[in-house]
Image 1: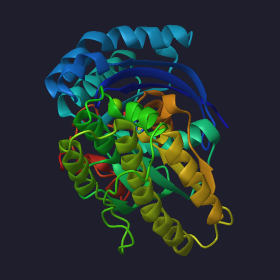
Image 2: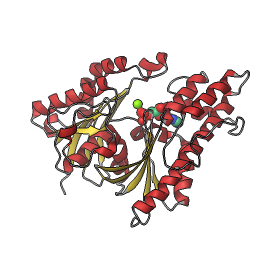
Image 3: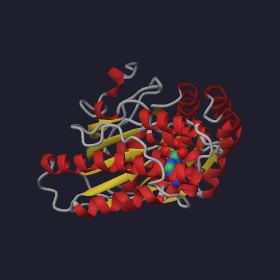
Image 4: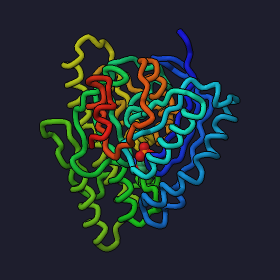
Length: 357
Ligand code: AMP
Ligand code: MG
């Protein structure tokens, strides 16, 4: 089994990142370098990511980060097997910066280009870090996504449920903004929640107990806004009450997905629930999901926070898995703002759909 060395680039949102990863499926892999520049400060005054600021910042620093990643890994560009970059979904200006840079590097060194779906990066992180076998159930919870997927192979995903409105990380960020806490909201809401009473305020749990595995958070966000309009609310209690509602929603939907996964993959004796995305850094959410997984006979794997939030090691690894399948992508590959994970695997020829939304 030959080990592969891949340079990965990530620029789809507000993290500019470059990393070098070595290994072979199913993992775990070796992360030779992992350089991440978070643009949090640039966006903080606006309380959210501003696309124009993000793409400009990616453009300014990406070259330097790539040089750092190669130096940290103690290798030359000529030594990598391929160059992988996020090709979508994400903020299109940022995706263009990373993908175009990867194309230039690949062309200059006559190396293959691998166009990576950002969501596949999150999905496959648990193989990079823990060597998790297929099939597994993925709960992807980030600032832009809230999805339950069955992963049957590096490019075979079945979407169980997704959010009908806000992503859960977005709900954390908006709650923080409403309550006057600094951006990014997630970690701040969690810190306040730890000191508050989760039963202090009664907040709605949209879709709880309903059929299907979709999510909805906008009603919860609206309720927080109404709560905040009252006099003298306790911020710790508000955060705790919000987080308790978010946990109930995530656990209710995930419980249904665990049952569905059992039906779909009856041969998996002790399957794994993988939790990925920035919100997986939340310890209270992690603890609740661990208990849920255990009660359903599932293992749970939560990659370390630095590989759960946006990073390029996960993109390099997803590129490595795609490369190991024999896939290569053309230099004409178009960046995609939207790119659902469950439609990337059917024919192995994504070129025919590369302009699809
Ligand atoms: P990502 O989109 O994967 O880069 O993750 C960023 C998102 O994760 C943002 O919406 C953050 O607010 C959220 N997040 C990060 N840490 C936490 C936490 N401890 N609790 C809840 N949300 C978090
Ligand atoms: Mg991010």
